[in-house]
Image (tube, rainbow, N blue to C red; front, side, top):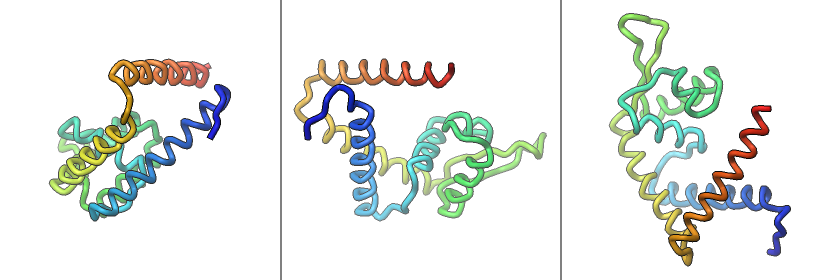
Amino acid sequence: MDYGVDAVVSLISRIHSLSQDFLRRKMTEAGLPELVSSHGFMLFCLSRTERMTLGELAQRINRDKSTTTVLVRKLEAADLVATERDESDSRKKYIRLTEKGTAYNAVTARLSDELLRTSYRDFSAAEQDELLRLLLKLHGNIADARAE
């Protein structure tokens, strides 16, 4: 395919779609449950801390609390996360990974590494760094425009 510089956002969207297809296929091969990318990002965020409040998690994944609640319920049903109430404030709910959620993250980390190796095939280290620098700049421009 021939892409011009004005097709960068379209190309990024296609790369995202191809990446999701790659991961979905690999997850199916690994026998992992079908989850949307928001679920995977939630599990990743929870792997970086012992537990998070629903509000903290919602902020981290850039979703409102009601949407986050629905996502957490699906992860609970799959036994990937558990929720618990704060002992001193019953209105506060914490979410943490279960043992199964931790194991899930280990497999998805391996699959993400495989995707990165595939993505960066034939890229020099300097090209990888430059790509990241440019994508961060592009992200910043769009994020700044969103805030205006």
